[in-house]
Length: 152
Image (cartoon, rainbow, N blue to C red; front, side, top):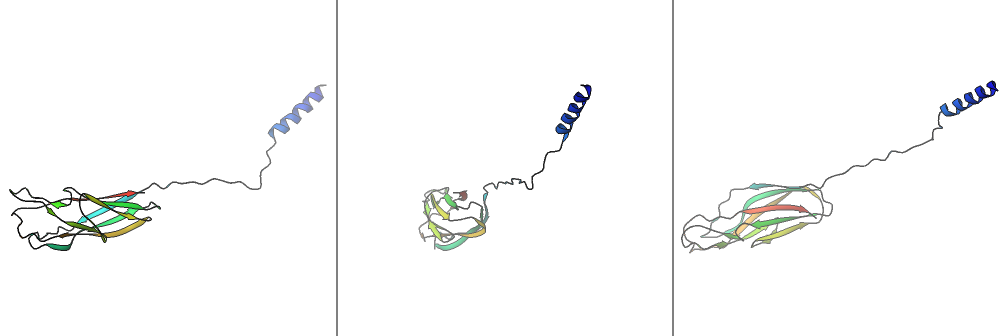
């Protein structure tokens, strides 16, 4: 009886410690994530506009666009003064102008340019046209354009 118990114990020990059978193949799941990144690098050309004689399509800056949204993205060009050059000089009236961004014209508070896919290091020209105003009051006139990028 003692021998049977010892033999049974040895059999159980052998079954418990026996290695598992290995499969002939296996798989490892790989995954990764790319975050949405859209940026603009704006360069101000420091251009001077001629208000008295007018200025036509003067290059005022350039923008380098980068956006990895496969659906595309939107560039918004916004004017701080609603599309007008303003002066603090007594009697000065705002001088309206037209902006061109990469060939798309806009005026007023803001306008948008839509890209249909991702782009990297896309350079866009920014230019301004000011109609002649021979009766403009003396003074400094200015406005600020803000260029914004957003993925779709």
